[in-house]
Amino acid sequence: MPDAPILLKSLRSHFLGGREAMASGLPVLRRQVVGNGAARAIDMNGSYCAGQLYVQEYRLAEPRHPHPVLLWHGGGMSGAQWESTPDGRQGWLWRLLQSGYDVFVADAPERGRASWAMYPQIYDAAPIFRSKEEAWHLFRIGPANGYAPRGQPRRAHPGQQFPADAFDTFAKQFVPRWLAHDAMALDAYRQLLDLAGPCIVIGHSQGGGYATQLARECPGPIRAVVAVEPTGTPERVDGSLPPQLLVWGDHFDHHDTWQRYRAQTDAYWDALRRAGRRADVLDLPAAGIAGNSHFCMLDRNSDRIAELIVDWLNGLD
Amino acid sequence: MPDAPILLKSLRSHFLGGREAMASGLPVLRRQVVGNGAARAIDMNGSYCAGQLYVQEYRLAEPRHPHPVLLWHGGGMSGAQWESTPDGRQGWLWRLLQSGYDVFVADAPERGRASWAMYPQIYDAAPIFRSKEEAWHLFRIGPANGYAPRGQPRRAHPGQQFPADAFDTFAKQFVPRWLAHDAMALDAYRQLLDLAGPCIVIGHSQGGGYATQLARECPGPIRAVVAVEPTGTPERVDGSLPPQLLVWGDHFDHHDTWQRYRAQTDAYWDALRRAGRRADVLDLPAAGIAGNSHFCMLDRNSDRIAELIVDWLNGLD
Image (cartoon, rainbow over all chains, first blue to last red):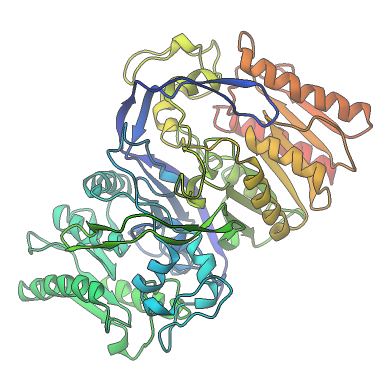
């Protein structure tokens, strides 16, 4: 994929879904809001929207495929993960546009530009935050004891494809997440499917799990799924299902949490195949591509993996 | 400005600035993170980045101006306010690209994809949230007693240009804000100026105030400022300053808070002119354009106002 320019017909964003919510019983504050202005009253009692989704819609002047690609980020992340790599290269958004696909980039409810709601008045609980220490290990960049504070040498897994020198920049894009809000996210993604119509979904991690769940529930709009290291995939094959591609990186050895997550998804993929559904697997190490982290769209070989995925999609036409 | 397509050379995003922060003393939780997975340990003690800024960089294949435009949103908002209007039209991002400018769209620290940090461990306080009731009045869409719950008739100011029928969609893009974090935001915007180099800043409300402050402090990179209904402008003229355009909408009557904010900025603009600096004013009602809210980039006549601003910028070349 040479770095050719992109001719866009339009670029829009949308806020979809969510529910009306009320906050009441809060004290009215008096605070200085504007730097050198006088204090004013701040009354947060009132009406809000909670649970909406944000999505950017990039439309090409001359798309070469009938269906747009929807990019669904992972847990604790936002749509920014598809735009650029931490070491400053173009991300999969650009590669898909170059490949002739219209693209939608979502921020799921609570994440990024989708915003979040106050707790405990509207959301019932506080969010959880991902430390750099956890990310280093959980994203399979290096062993738990390989993390060190910024500026000190860190130990990554051998042959690591993640640009570990840019790990501190990468960590700037982590966003808080709430547990037990899956139903809210799925509701909003259903609204996105209504907006987008027939489409391909590329989902990563939590977003890959959502893609496999909604492909099972509403196979009409979803014509293909690429699940990149998904979590929370369905437990049972059901209904008509679109073709699905599963992508796994490297460094699963000695990682109990990931071995459990992977076993669950591999079992679903096996069941899909036994039931005669198209369920392909791109196991990168098995394909001779070693060293990928949990974030192959940010790894140094991200362009090569994008090509493999685009080849698979083009093979469906 | 006809709806011509845009030829992009690149589209990237960046996370800039921020400081290292530590959280400690938090209990380790055991929670189910993946929908149908087993509980795992969640240890939030560790290292974080706090105060970073997110920015999207849209580069044209053939820009027609030497300097990019930086779009700085208002308080409690994100860069989404420049992308689309609540009634679904193209926003100023698209209009500026069509006018031949490269464009940077920022999410200031704590807002949107820039993420936010836990409190009270890293940030010292809780954020404030903007209710729909407050927004209806504070954004000068209608009188305070003109707001009504969703689905019931609301009363806007006469001749209102804001697409009031889409107010509930608009409210989905409100994000929480922290007070007393101006220094953090300004630090991050300085990093953005380092990245962008010589540029034009179009800032709205709080972002317009930041633009006027940084134009005073670092006039080198900032070659022009368009301050759309800015708040928190400087109190004193100082140093060499680039040309600045101030834009005011309508419906200031009977709005005490806005009359105070406006008086402060008008006094600064008067001082700029007395000191021989170029400080122009586009008072929309005085120019025969009636009815604009605090968000003229989202109002029904947003394209017309974009044209006036582009004309002013082109007059500087």
